[in-house]
Length: 224
Picture 1 (cartoon, helix red, strand yellow):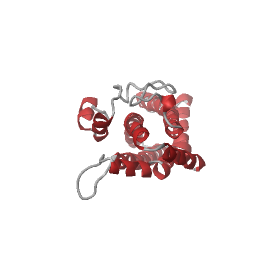
Picture 2: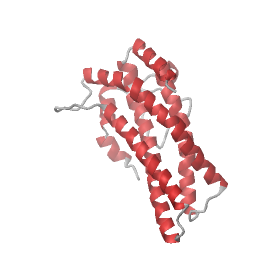
Picture 3: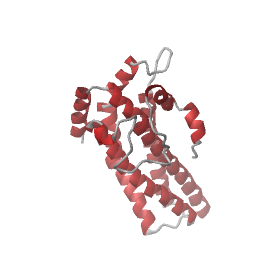
Picture 4: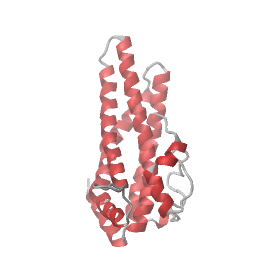
């Protein structure tokens, strides 16, 4: 899955919101900020963001680390003709373990205790589509969450299935499909994190009150 950043800049609905609401420094998912020292987002330094937003951004950086390692392992595995070695196996195991133990929890925190209030704020601010059933950036993010689960389950199960296939041609075909889905997952994760860090979270900082963010933070921390 290749992302055309020029085309994305033209059509991305989240970017259009930023252009209307914020003056942000130019970045892309492929030129990310430093892990725990991102530049000012929407004119707001990371350390001045509310702790609720900092919590989510720090979790993003942890996810990016294992995702980058997994992404490299996928390429190395395919380039080797699908010969597993300890380094590749370790990266695969770390990613899927993190996916199950942390990514799904992170998504649940956003969906249960962050997105509902922010969606209401976006609707009141007029930041939504027109039509009978208006949508906001929240729906785009939640769609991504659902796609994560689909791609994660599909790639994991296909990699597992391949180990039980004796025919080399059939095994290679299954591994190709698994790797294609895994790479689509890593690219979507990077794009999703970029959109949240540089579009959605600055809007949350702008539109949500300190009290609302504090309630959100406490609820997210309680979710285990």
